[in-house]
Length: 217
Image (cartoon, rainbow, N blue to C red; front, side, top):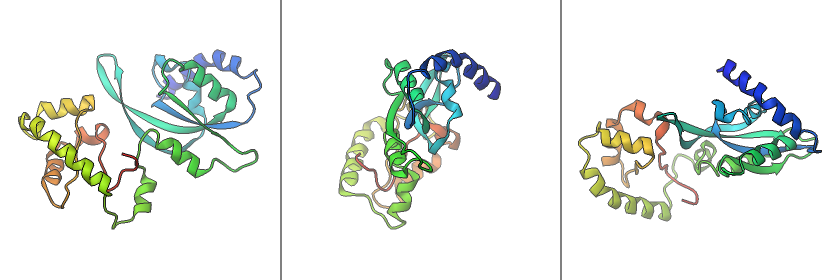
């Protein structure tokens, strides 16, 4: 991994060098998807990996890798403003790759955590910090409860076609991002049993769990 990243950084040097001469002073937050920036298609962006990451690495769907599909991730970086401009310009045909955040205040020790969290929620709506704020006794909102009921009803016909909890149909749905797991309204229930029966290695990167409370969802 280090050798691949080093090679890509060297390839990116020419483009980055051209971007540094246009007066881009200061620093800025950046949400970057397609992380980590390995692979030849990321050669122009690989230099971003040298900058400091703020907050966790989050799931961000999936991306094609030859004939297969790999999990995708997103991170927030603090980068020089000229690097932010270069990254946006290079990905102008793929607007989900880069999201610009606010500038960092001159002389500050680091970015405002609220700015970092706001950018991260653009990639993943529910963060570890949200679970801490909700507390152990939190209950789903009325909107979430209603949305879960609608989703359960829509899944009944589809689940009837599955051959079993370890079926190829479930695995394929996880791969293409159409599978969803809806928590029980009352615990314990069938959703808890379903989770226990799914192979753990299937869930590592492919599944977005609907937690006790989802913001704006």
